[in-house]
Amino acid sequence: MLKRIGIVLIAMFMGLVITIGLPSFAQTNRPTSPTAPSVPNRNQLSQVDNQFMIDANRNALAGIALGQLALTQSANNEVKRFAQAEVDEQVGVRNSLVHLAPSLGVNLPSEPTPRDQEVMQRLMSLSGEQFDVAFMNETGINAHLENAAIYQREAGLGQNQDLVRLASQGLSIITQHYNTASALTGYEVAQVPPRIDTPSQGSQSTPSSFIR
Image (cartoon, rainbow, N blue to C red; front, side, top):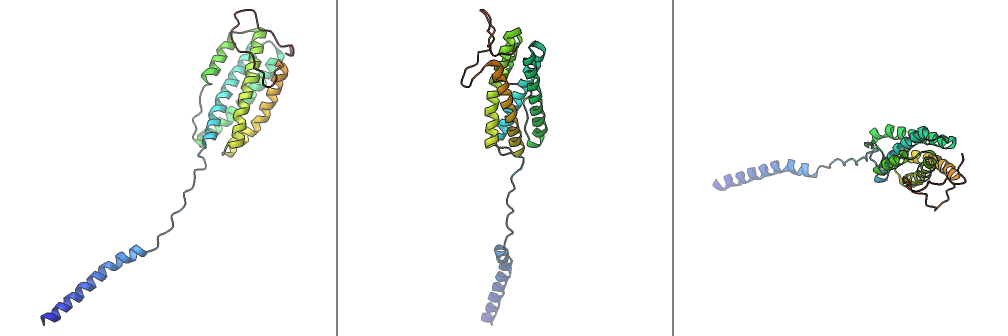
């Protein structure tokens, strides 16, 4: 009798173990739903794109400020026409960047670089032909050589299509303005433009090719 009771208890115990274990086993072997692949943020900028926005914006602010200065300080019609074209160019760039910045999560600088601010101060101390030559060398030659490198890098290596398009379109305008400035100043590739310093002795000579 005791033996039979023991067999019954063992059977009940084994049944309990099987009953308890089955849900766990079933849950362990239940196929899991595949994890959805992460979707990259379409607005996330590469380092090249982000740097382009910062550099192009700073240069646009400088170009606008220097161009407006030339419009009020120069008496040379060719210089003033160039200055107005420069302002128009950079206002367009600035507006495009300001329009794109919020959706791309970029905080654009609100002022030019310290170097460009220093250039502005030096130009403000000049007048007449000295101002015209210095302005064309700085804004016409130096700034457009710098912008050409910035825009070429974005056009070739950028990932954001809006910025790549902006850079590609900007390069043609940069080339036009650079060619105009080269014709006015007589600048040739690999030539070092004169420094923008307040003259202490004599006066800067105007290049023979400079149009009056």
